Image 1 (cartoon, rainbow, N blue to C red):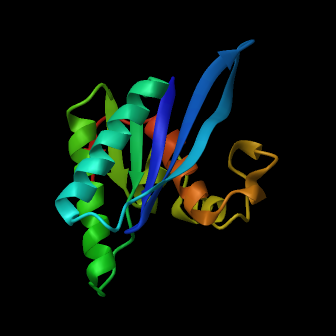
Image 2 (cartoon, helix red, strand yellow):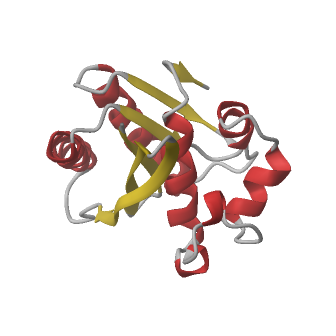
Length: 165
């Protein structure tokens, strides 16, 4: 089954398409795509949202994604324009996920990801910080922190029903 993990920032969105397959009685995990969608800053916000929605709709169709996970930010008492933009972008992606061919999705923080992967927040943090390689991926250090968050969210989404924070 294929899934997409998404990590949103105000100016770009990192996404990774992942897959779990059964091979010879074992579950094997693969990273099929690891990309960054640049959010065009020259556009007004409504047009940015439309661009992001249309782009992700195409990505989901292209890869045949059935599950999705959005890694949302941990709580912060500081609110600025970047956080507001990120929230808008996360919202339009959530709206798309609820109205497209994706069967299951979640949006959540480390605690949600940990619960889905039957782990704890410290372990999830060690994957994201690069201290431990998720599923023993040999090249885990080659990924940025944002990419790791998207990959972890993608694999967590394979365990999810519809959930959000």
